[in-house]
Length: 471
Image: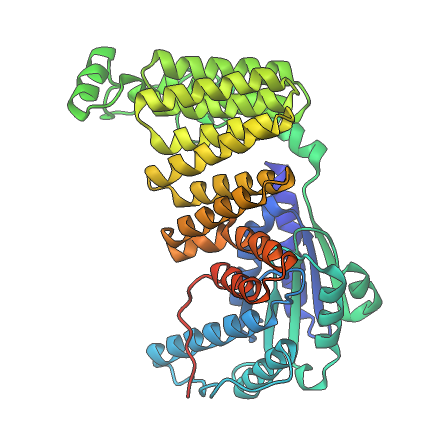
């Protein structure tokens, strides 16, 4: 799709110019969250350009309110450096890197990061030529501080051999900084053109609808191809008959529809058409197409897929501001998930019900529904979903003055966090629950408990990593 290819092409071209123009110190890339990973992949590929002699270090630590992230970026840098050093040693091509040495002591996190960069720069001798720091925070919660910190990096004399690529997916925060650097900076806009993306999607859906029955490969997803099925290749296996699909499905204990290309083609088209219609503001069409997709799955005996389609349908109905109807859809999804014994989908349906009750301003019922979701999540070993249920329950309870009950709910959220894998705790809402409970303790003069909960929140949101630090 041109709407995606064009911004990525601009990134590739900008990176190539950056590599062959050493006087450009900064490349600023503005993109969208949906393209962020693709943009980073294309930037990282630039490291292998024939004219490049500077290792790329991609650092993705986000910035938070009150947390600049430089300590974690320093650790990212150290780990990537050690990985590069190990690879060079293994390659046995006569190129090696000295160890970074012990973690330096510094006045603050940004100063420590600068010391780590300075150390690395001193070790990148021939055939290397400096280094490229790709600063690509997942998000930036404190733009003013972020811009100030980046400006500081660019002005440090000891880092003059470091060059920077900034990738910002939640706003071009450093754009004015790049403008101020004049010839020392280049900017590239790698954001999606929404109008062009909508046109591309419409064309793709039209191509999918006109593809011959049983189309496969690129043609099945809307790419160019003949409007009639090509003749079978010599020696190619014949398509399965309905009877053969039935027999294979029985052998594998699966539904025949999963082996029917025509069914898959029709279902795919309905799901994508529904999503596109909603994006275009055609809620009625979106709901109709999604409902038909759900009914197709029900008729074909695809139980899990049917519940999933129903959850999406409820979301579309809710976005169409048909809130009471959305609640009934989510209740139906919960009933189906229970009947089909899909516990995690049941928890998701319960959370959706609670959210919808909240939109209807039925706060007491919503709190009860969230508590039910938390309880159900714990019962079916879905701790991340349980955390969200109990956290939201506590938030609603404290809002209605039920402090004691809210405290119990938040404690249950933290108990659920104890049963979640460490990497999932970091992306759950458990840290927020800990901070909400800490604020409650602080309000009632329980400073020690509040401090402990704040420390627990920080620990919960820090995923476990294997750090290589030399003594």
